[in-house]
Image (tube, rainbow, N blue to C red; front, side, top):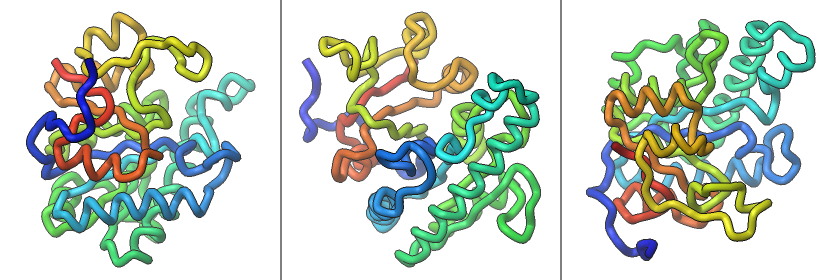
Length: 245
């Protein structure tokens, strides 16, 4: 039995790390940035920001360039990953612009130094921005090839003492199979980290899951496109799938 949307799962979160894929910004086209989707996401973030929640964000770059695909096409993996990191910064700047047009004070911090565009990533400075109710967007992954933005999300969440990693997807729950291909795929309300690893479920990559498991950092997977889902989730409602110990 799955909880109704009104049921409480936990106390309201005070500081979160929101993980957005690059594809989330692309909409139906699958490539580039859909301004309608960008505005929809920025409105959801504005709503929870105005409620007093401290928000850190990690963005992927798959809507512009995906490093692994570049590697499989014959490109050196490290070079492809660096290109992917630059793609994430483009998305960060687009989201920053959308948020600041809503009067949400925002800072972009990059793991690769590019001082004309973003601050360098400094943990203590990021925490201070959050304390001052600024949204902090982390770009360029970890700054190292071979690490995904899922791993970046787990790492940054722990560094800034976020209470949860919230991963936005296009489905309501984590399923045991692709629900778009398997009509009777089973949804999960809760999972353990070991469940995710042993079943090979596509929540986050194994490095990210292991980091969260080692540090008992919960993960919630939810449908980004369900209206007000993020706001209700942050308020403590039982939205999506919770992954914990």
